[in-house]
Image (tube, rainbow, N blue to C red; front, side):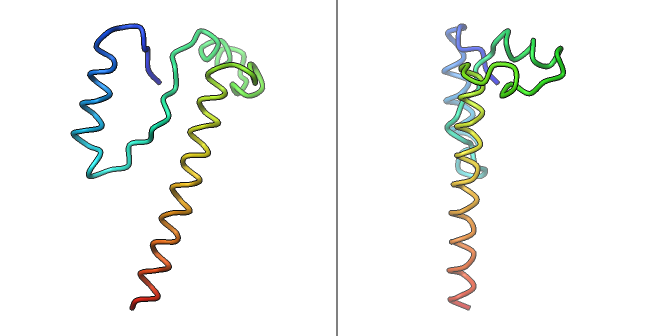
Length: 85
């Protein structure tokens, strides 16, 4: 979750991607800071129940899709490695 308002946020994101991106998966999706995200926690609801059409719910949905696609790629890669052995 990130606050895009400060100017240095892009610099920090770029630094994380360049420093860690070769060693660990750094997803492209970025979850924006939002009062709605804070409110849903106070209400005891998921962001999808509280504000399903909001930007935070959309960002989490994008992240979930990215995680699923990454898992599928890793699974295909593992199958190829097994086939080679």
